[in-house]
Image 1 (cartoon, helix red, strand yellow):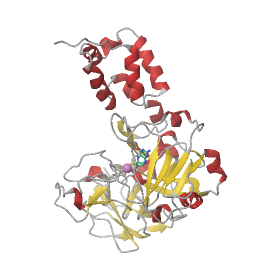
Image 2 (cartoon, rainbow, N blue to C red):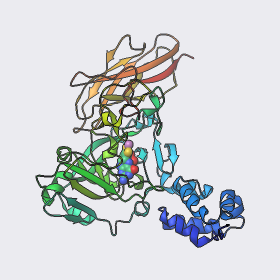
Image 3 (cartoon, rainbow, N blue to C red):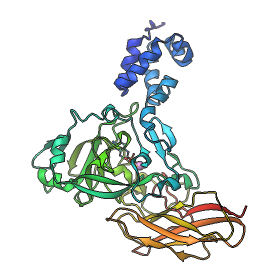
Image 4 (cartoon, rainbow, N blue to C red):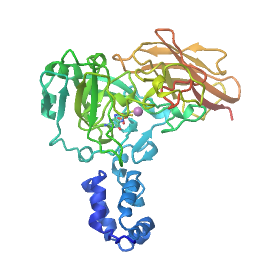
Amino acid sequence: MKKEPRKLDRDRLRGILEDNGGSPEDLERFNEYMSRRGFLRRTGVIAALAGMGAGAEVTLQRLFGQGLIPVGWAAEAETKAIASKPDMIIHNDRPVNGEFSPHLLDDNITPSPRHFVRNNGLTPQRAKNKDPQGWELAIDGEINTPLKLTLDDLKKMPAITKSLLIECGGNGRGNFVPKVRGNPWDRGAVACSEWTGVPLKEILNRAGLKSSAIYTAHYGEDPPIGAAPPFSRGIPIDKAMEEHTLVAYKMNGKDLEALNGYPVRLVVPGWIGSCSQKWLNRIWIRDQVHDSNKMTGYSYRVPAYPVVPGSRPPKTDMVIATSWVIKSLITRPAANTRIDIGKTFKVRGHAWAGENQVDSVYISTDYGLNWTKAVLTQPRNQYAWYTFETELAFKGKGYYEIWARAVDNQGVTQPARQPWNPKGYLGNVIHRVPVLVGV
Ligand SMILES: Nc1nc2c(c(=O)[nH]1)N[C@H]1C(S)=C(S)[C@@H](COP(=O)(O)O)O[C@H]1N2
Ligand SMILES: [Mo]
C-alpha cells in the first residue's frame, strides 16, 4: 500500500534545521533561500526528496547531519566565522577544521587569527554573537559543593596569564604511511597564544573534591552534527589540579575567538588538544576514568605497544593518548624559498616537548648526515614553545632540505620516519623544508 506523501513544506524543513543545531542566523539564511524562486529546483535533491513522502524527513536529517543540504546554504553556515581566520588552510567547513602554513606560525605568541581550528560539531550561536548572557559553568559530581559560575563570577576569581601551547592530537596525521583516516593535518594544528583565566584547581578547591574524585568529564555548548553524541573528554584529577590547567576567558588579551571557544574554554597544555574543551559549560567530576565515546575504542587512543603499520590492535590494547612528545617546527625560511648562492639567511622555528623541557635543537642540510646546534631561547613560562635560530649559507646551487630535530631533557629526539598508529596521533617526524639555491 502506498503511504500518503507528507508535504515537505517550509515549516517542516525549518524544524529539521532547528533540530540539527541551526542557529537563528542559519534560519534567516534558510528563509532567504526558500523565498527565492526556483530554490527547490536548484537544490534538486530536495525536489527529489519532496516526492518521497515520510521517509524524506529521515533522509533529510541524515543529509543535514553531513552538511550536504541545502548545498549552497550549508556551506555558508560557518562562513562568517571562518572569515575571522583569513590565511587558514581549510580541511572542512562543517565542522570547521583548518590549520596554518608553518611560515605563518613564526610569532612567539600566535596571533588569534592564526590559531588553528579543530571542531567536531558546529560553532555555537552564542560564540558567533559574542553573547555571554545566560552562559554558566556547572561543576558537579564527586564534589562537596556543586557550583554554577557566570562569566562575572569567573572574572572575580584570581586569574593568571600564560603563553600556552595547544596542539591537536592528530597534528602531523598527513605524514603517516600508510595513510590513516581523519583530518589530514600537516604541521599547522598547533598554536601558542597567551591565555588568561582561572586555574581549574582554584575552582575545584572551591567546590571541594571528594576523595572519590579521580577524573574530569568536560562538556561544551557546541551542537553536535547529526546524531553524534556531544564531544566530551576528560583528564585525571592530577592534571586538572596542575597550576597551568586553565579555565580561560581571554585569548591574547581579548575575548576568545568564536571558533576557539568563546566565552570560556579549558586550556590543558602539554596534553593533546582534545582535552582543552571549548565553549565549556560543564565539568563533571567522576569516580572513574571518563568513558564517553571520545575516551574509548580507537578515539584519542594509541596502541599500548608498537603495531605493524596499517594494522589495528584490539580495542583492549589501546590506551588513552595524554601528553605530547618532543617536536619542532621550522618557520623560516618558508618551503620552496629561493636563496642566492653564498647568501646568509636565518633559519628559525619553535620546539616543544609535551610535559618535558626542550634541551636542544639541531639543524641539518644534508639529509641528517651532519647536525649543527641552533641557538635556543627559553620560553616565558612552562608549556610555551621554545624558539630556535641559526644562520646558514649554501656554497653551491641545487635543491636542499633544511631539517630540524629537537631533543628533550630525557634525551628523547624526533624520528626520521613516523612511527605508526591507527588514528595518526602524536605525529612528530622531523620537519623538512625544501629550498632552492641559485636556481
Ligand atoms: N566543545 C569542544 N571542544 C573542543 C573540540 C570540540 O570539537 N568541541 N575540539 C577539541 C580538539 S580535538 C582540539 S585539537 C582543540 C582545538 O582547539 P582550537 O580549535 O581552539 O584550536 O579543541 C578541543 N576542544
Ligand atoms: Mo584535536
